[in-house]
Amino acid sequence: MKTDLKWHLRVNVKAAIARAYVRVVGTNREFSWIFFDTLLPLLGTAAYVYVYRAMDAPEEYVGFVLLGGAMTAYWMNVLWNMASNFYFERQGWNLELYFIAPISRMAILAGMAIGGMFMTTIRAGSLLVLGSMLFNVRFNVSSVPLVVLAFVLTLVALYGLGMLFSSLFLMYGREAWHTSNLLQEPVYLLSGFYFPVRALGFYIAIAASIIPLTLGMDAVRQLVFSHLHFSLFPVQVEIAGLGVLGAGLLYAAAVALDRMERAAKQEGRLTLRWQ
Amino acid sequence: MAVGSRSAAECWRTFKLAAWLGWQMESNWADPFLFSIYSIVKPVSHSLILVVMYLVVRGQAAGGGLFAQMYVGNAFFLYVGQVLFGLTWVVIEDREFYQMFKYMYVSTPNIYWYLLGRSFAKMAIATVSVVIVLTFGRVFLRLPIHASTVDLTTFCFSMFFGMVSCIGMGIGLAGVMLVVARHGGHASEAVAGALFLLSGAVFPIDILPRLALYPAIALPTTYWLEGVRRGLLGSGMGQTMAVFSNRELIVVLAMLSLVYLILGTLTFVMCEKTAKARGLIDMHTHH
Image (cartoon, rainbow over all chains, first blue to last red; front, side, top):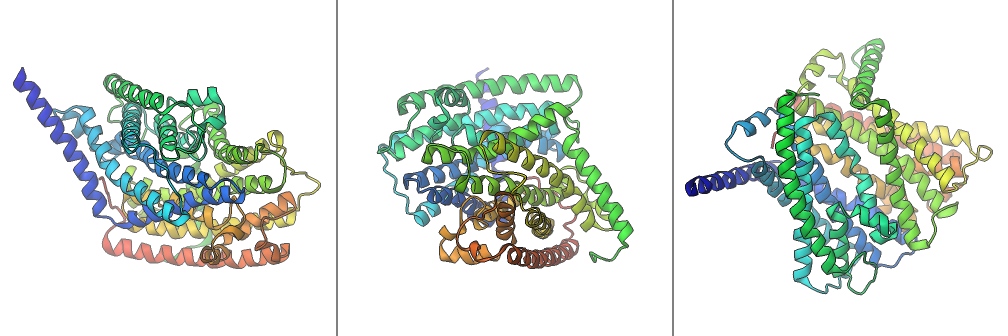
């Protein structure tokens, strides 16, 4: 039994590393993304900086926009490279291989997440660094360990949500694809990507907290612009909330993957392409 | 392949069938009710981001002035995103996911017109989105758009040449997609983001740094958005554009649109040649 557990653990870790490896190496074989994924998104984010400048907003709002722009990269990665990846894998004839291999679906998804985070962190980091230099943003960080903790918990919860969404793609095709598409602008709005989420009103902000980015960005903003007061909840509460969300979403993802896989097999839709 | 090497009738038939196919692919995944909700939520949310930003800073977001100009620019910019995405994503989607691009390539008389047809469905959806966003703005945010004050000539010419320029940029980018891997599919969003900034879609271009002002005034989208603002609201945004009369604005927009259409087409033809020479027409990049 002990050997079995050890073997399963070893195989799954190897599967996750292998899946992440393909992503990282694949990225390095095609350098066009450096231009398209780092420099051009900075210009898109800069537009919102100029919106605030046109309205004579306080300069701190520029920092809000840059943080929101950086987190956009993660949200896009979760939606398109994580949640909908089973859809793309099915279209590319890889999905069957994952399902006949003696590995957990979560290991494959974890590999996708790690590989995706690598590329996305470069994109988000370069946007933040270049944007800060370009617009002369000053961060007033109150606690670096708490910033790191809030950020890591946000990513765990966010990629857990991505795993949960990915289960939908075992069953559905274009319906789930369009759902991912739909989850862009409304989430930018509800999570307060470019403004403090409290501006939406307390109850809407509470409802939007089911999306990990809402609490995550509010916590990080509080910590890096500690001289401003715009929070939804105190940082400690938001960090605890992110921890609960992360654990809950990962558990829900495991259950949903199992159930959707079974349902998809029963209906013969697991490997059905172009649906 | 030469873009104009086939008869007009064949090109028209390709365009028409591709547009029908595009519409089916865009709309038949859901029942009409769900599709309507989907068509409303996305563009309205996009506009509400700007509304809340304005609200946070100014305390209220309604009426005319800067808010109306931002709102209208933001609404019409939906076309840019949709047309660019529509044209570029077809290449990635057909080649990588449906793996049909090679069949389309050999079976259609002209792939250029096929791509234009497929993007037409996106343009139709963008039109619905823009109408919804403007209606929402007129009803709930008291945008000063009145039938009696709308300058239809400026608006229509701006729209026509604006669409031509979007197609020019989109077709050029579609050409680039022929030679890059799958993750290049997000390039259209990145380019749209850059255009969002440089065209002054939601702020006057006067506040851009001088270095960014030169590309801004070389973009047809800058003149197009200014044209639709003047057409619908009766006034434009910022001092830089104020030096042009409505007529001059349309003339500059027409010339730039033509230039971008020619450049985009040339880029497409060159990239297509490269893709064929390197055997990339049926490339699969599954990482």
